[in-house]
Length: 131
Length: 223
Image (cartoon, rainbow over all chains, first blue to last red; front, side, top):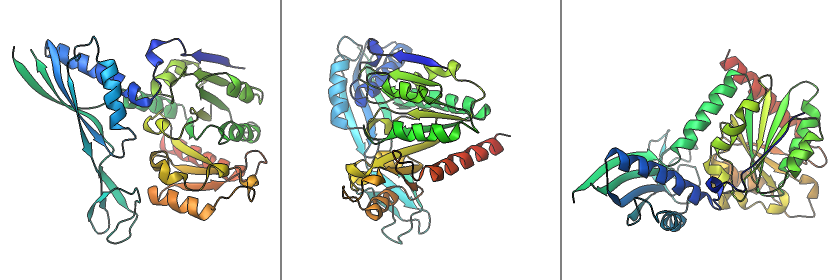
C-alpha cells in the first residue's frame, strides 16, 4: 500500500500563509521574466486588474506586494489595482447586468442562464519600466 | 534613463492553470476521474472519503491525495481502509496548488478509476486553484449554518456539487435545507445538491451514483 508524504514545511517556496502571497509570488515570476526580456533596469509601475469575484482581496495583494518587492527589480515600483466589477449577460433577454450580490438570476427576466463577462479576472495588465 | 511601458495582460494564476490543464488531460487519457473536495475544517471531508472507500473498493480502484497544513492523520485514516493515500503537508499554506499535485503525479497508478483530492480545510483560498479535477465538490456541514453559501460565494460558484453533511445533527442544530440550497443555487444554478451523514452513512449512495455516472461519461468522451 502506498504510504507517501510530502512535507513542504521547510520549503521557502511554500511559506505563504494567505493565497494572496502565493499569487504575488507568481506575479514576481512574470515581472522578472518581462524585465529581462526588455532589459529593464527597474520596474516603476505594476498595474493589475482584479475582479470583484476573483476570490482575492486587493488590500492583501498590496500588503503582499510590499513585502515581496524588497531587493527585487520592482523594489521601488508602485502597485495600481483596477477593480473590475462582476458583469454578466443574460442568455435569454441579452441584458448586461453588474452584480454586487452574487445572485445569478437575471434582474430583467429572472432567467438563470447568465454568462460571466468580467469580474473573475486576476490579470497583470501593464508595466512601466526604466530601460 | 528611458521609460518603457508594456502591455502584458497575463493571468497571475496562469502557471497554475497550465499545470492543472496538463494534469487533467493526462488523467483523463488514463480514464481516471478526479474529484477535488473543498470544505471547512471539520466539515466531514475525511469521514465522507472513508464511507466512499468502504463502498467503492469492491468494484473500483481509488486513491486519495490529502492536503493539510500539518500532520499525516487524514492519510492514515484512508490507508486504514486499504486505500492508497498521499499526504501533502503544506506547512502553512491555506490551499493546494496544481504544482503540488504535479510533484506526486508519477506515483499515481495508471489503473485507477477515481482519484480524490481532499483540499486543505478552508472555504476561501482553495476556490481559486484548479488542481486538474473533473468535479469540484463543496461540503457544508449543518453546524456551520445555512447562511454560508452567500458568505463564501466563490467556493459555491466554482463547484459542481454541494454535499450537505451531518444531517444526523438535526434538530439539535438549526439548519434550513431549503434556505441553504436556495442560496447556493442563486450563486450557481448548475450545482447538484446531496444531503448526507457521512458518520451514519446516509445519502452516500446518491453521491457515488453521481461519481460513477461521471466516470462513465468521461470514458465515453475519451474513447
